[in-house]
Length: 454
Image (cartoon, rainbow, N blue to C red; front, side):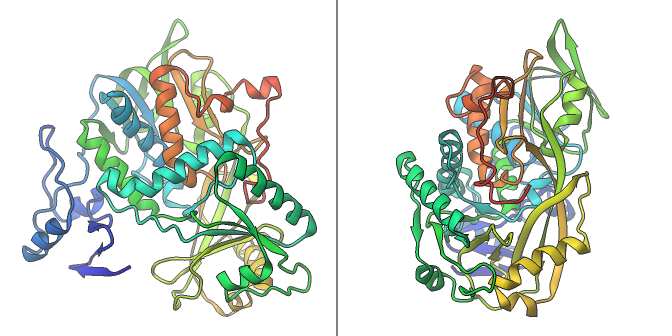
């Protein structure tokens, strides 16, 4: 996959779409003019790239408008991360609802969307989980074309290593379930694992590699580009992406939502979608109900860039760690969640030690790398490790939360199903993920398939 560098911007020749150059912050710093209400979005193409290269990139507009709040919207989405923006996009694309505001207390994509390890897969055991994650994975395949924005989806494949006999049995069961669900996975031998990942050590002293669950059509995508692409498409449909707009209250009348209070004034709405990940419980308290979730930090780190050595994603759940190599050569490494509830969006030294110690046994070369940077995100975890996409006790309020450590891979599928739920009041894709399942005991247990220690 070739890249072209022009004036500090990177363009991928695979889809001839600029990679994130139209983010609000970049366009603003370059002095680009605002995109007016009536100005149609300029399409990106190889011809646009060539044209702007010839005139020193002076013709790029902002990707989305710097909108001001209106008095009333048909729908308000709280949270301008991947899930919130995808919901707004599919409300407009699939149902023609474009009088929508997406409110973000910080900056667009500054939460978990910009803090994850970008892994995309759909090899889940339970039918409802496999359906929504496979929908998301299939939408990732066409996202760059749908949004006219390079999401840099890389279907490089994902291996979940089996390092105990129990995992071998579990992954074979998952492979059989996936076959019935229409999800393409297979259980592969240690020799095949070594062929796909030459740097791996198959004969670990404690946990040798006994095989792996291989999903060839899984992979990674550029998380910032996913958020920016959705925001650009929403803005082009006339929606308002409003940053630095914190919701301070939920206004209700007779058990029905009528609007929100923000640090920029009151805004009325007919429907309200809460899509704020680890802060979902806080918003639910504002609305007068509680959620069966807990918020914990999930940390990740990247190494210094090195030459290409691993072109698949590897997850080792027994020793607990997962790793892939980015386009720039960095080894992207993640581990389990913190062992206590917290809202800390930064790294910690003990987590580096635990995660790297686990990976060194399976990937000895990791011991010779230097760490480049580390960060954390706040994830919302349910008791059954499955999400909540549901109506709430307050009429007109809908909740999308509980994705835990698997939120990024689900963004398009989550947005597709949640938009249908908000527009029509029901969705086959989200039906099993209602709040009432915790009262009725209809758990969707994905604690193993989640792939991360909780």
